[in-house]
Length: 229
Image 1 (spheres, rainbow, N blue to C red):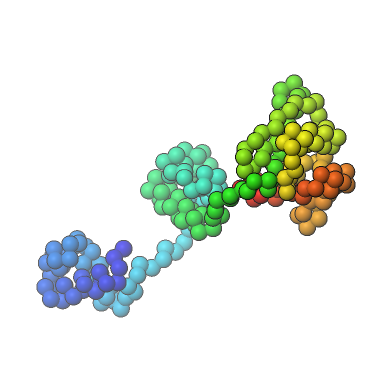
Image 2: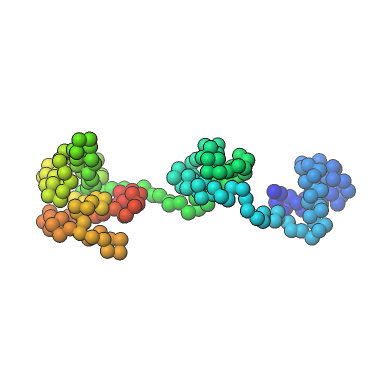
């Protein structure tokens, strides 16, 4: 679509030359473009192309397109997406799909989360978590966010007593206590959730007060919202 300035130049060239072909050569466009711009001006405008009215053939699969764009952080291509939308019932052209993907990516870029680097400081934060392994074995891991010091132990369960015992062993091995201990919303460490804020289990709270650190929890269903993200 030509800009308003380009359209005015085309109209000036046509009025001076009196020929679609001559104006097209002067402005570096096609004869049809000159004709379209001149006819639009003669009809009183508008200078911009009217918005498309009615439904697009990509509308039924637009939800799938937007979801795939979100999952891939706007990196998926229309070529990769074409087989998926065809399975979902899309029968349009690849060109229309590219346009729909471009619109979805543009919308995603406007609303996606912006990031800034998190710079941990010494003694500020210890992150810990459990990971289940084969055979019922459980892996406990704690990491000092600044130095990347790791404490790893195996256990048979993820109970509160086991978690606190391993955390105490970790602090003893490190020879110090961080300002915060960050976890996900472990069921053994929380008493409940109020206004999306975790209420620590009373024994865990006593443990934290005894050692002198602040319990911290990640946001629900938002791993990117963690303290160290």
